[in-house]
Length: 333
Ligand SMILES: Cc1cc2nc3c(=O)[nH]c(=O)nc-3n(C[C@H](O)[C@H](O)[C@H](O)COP(=O)(O)OP(=O)(O)OC[C@H]3O[C@@H](n4cnc5c(N)ncnc54)[C@H](O)[C@@H]3O)c2cc1C
Picture 1 (cartoon, rainbow, N blue to C red):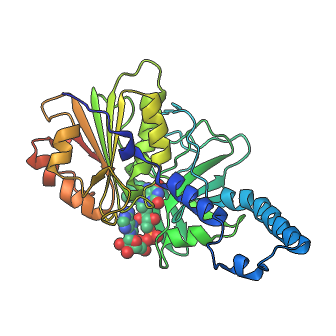
Picture 2: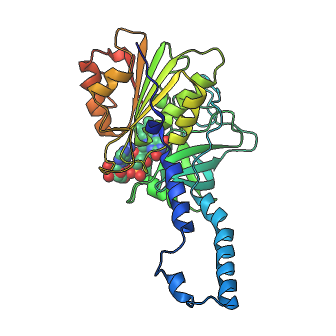
C-alpha cells in the first residue's frame, strides 16, 4: 500500500493562520483616508510626529498581550504515558476540580487546564475520556495532556454557541470548579493497538482522542506503526490541533496527515482537500481491509452514522462496512 505524504498545504495550521491574520490586521497601516491619516495635518508638525510615535509605541506595547490571547498550542514531542485501565485518579463518583487556566487557541476553541492535587497525575488509560458536569449538563471530553503532566490536566474544547457545556466552560471564572468522573465504559482500545497500519478519521473536536493515541504510538521507542490521520473540519479557521499534527508529521515520516474542509468558502486560499471523508479519500489513504489495519473514528453523530454506524452500536455499518472493513477493525471512540 502506497501511503502518500500529504502536501504541506493540506496540513496548514488554521490557528496559526488566524493568528497571523489577526496580527496583520492590527499592524497594517491605516489606508489613505483612514482615521489616523485624517487626524494629521497635511504638513506634519513636531507635535503630530510625537503623537504618531506615541501611538506606534502604544500599539507595539499592546500587541504581545493580545497575541498571547490567541496562540496555537505548542504540542511538544509525543509523550508515551500509557497506563492500564484501573489506575485513574478519577472514578465513577463526581470530583470537583478547579479551572486553573484558560487560553483561546483559535477563534472558537479553548485550552483549559484543571487542577489536580499537588504531585498527582491523571493516570488515564490510553484512548479514554472523562465526563465533565456543570449546570446539570454532562459531556465527554478527552484530555490532550498526557500522564506525564503532574498537578493538572488539559482539555481542548471547541466552543458551540448556546447553553451547552462548552459555552459554559468558555466563560467559567478561573478558580470555579467543574465535576469530573471517569467510567470504565469510556475506556476504548489500549496501546499497543495491534495493527501495522492505523487510520484515524476525526471530525472537528474528534481529533482529541487521536492526539492521545498518537502520543502513545509516536512517543513509544521502537514502535513502527504507520498512521494516517484524516481530519475533517468545516473551515480553515475551525481546524483544531493542526499545529500539533503538522509538527508531528514533520518529525515522524510514518505519520501522514490529510485535512479536508467541508465548508471552506470557494475561492479561498485553501489548496488542500475539500468535502467530507468519502470512499475516494479513504481508499486513497487508508490501508485496504485485508491488510493489518485498524480504523479509529471520532466525530459528530453524523460522521459516525455515515462512516461506521451509530457510536453506541457495536455493529459496523456505513461506508467502512461497504468498503469491506470488519467490525473488529473499526473502533468508534
Ligand atoms: C468520546 C468523546 C470525546 C469528546 N472529546 C471532546 C474534546 O476533547 N473536546 C471537545 O471540544 N469536544 C469533545 N467531545 C464533544 C463534547 O462531548 C460535546 O458534545 C461538545 O462539547 C458539545 O457539547 P455542548 O453541551 O457545548 O453542546 P450541545 O448543547 O450538545 O450542542 C450545541 C450545538 O453544537 C452542535 N454540536 C455538538 N457537538 C458537536 C460536535 N461534536 N460536532 C459538531 N457539532 C456539534 C449541536 O448540534 C448543537 O447545535 C467529545 C465527544 C465524545 C463522544
